[in-house]
Length: 97
Image 1 (cartoon, rainbow, N blue to C red):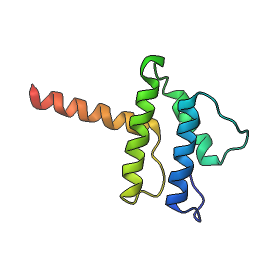
Image 2 (image 1 turned 45 degrees about the horizontal axis):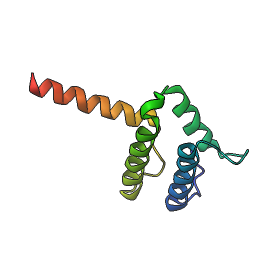
Image 3 (image 1 turned 120 degrees about the vertical axis):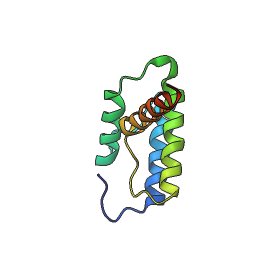
Image 4 (image 1 turned 120 degrees about the horizontal axis):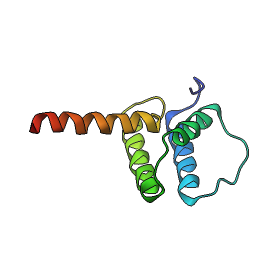
């Protein structure tokens, strides 16, 4: 997804800028890196409801930040983040039953 020479700190900064643009509601550029396009397409396919889209994106951003600070080489996709949340909810529900 990402070129082998990109520094993860630089990548995280670029990811944060991309999410900030999405949260603001306008993207003021017309060129994107391939990994940014993958992230944008993945976000689009997740079909987030407008009511909680911004909060979901903020939580996703914080999760990516934590992962990358722990050494993840690339940002996870939103679909991966949402899948992890679903798995945690299902595991918690099984423990309760």
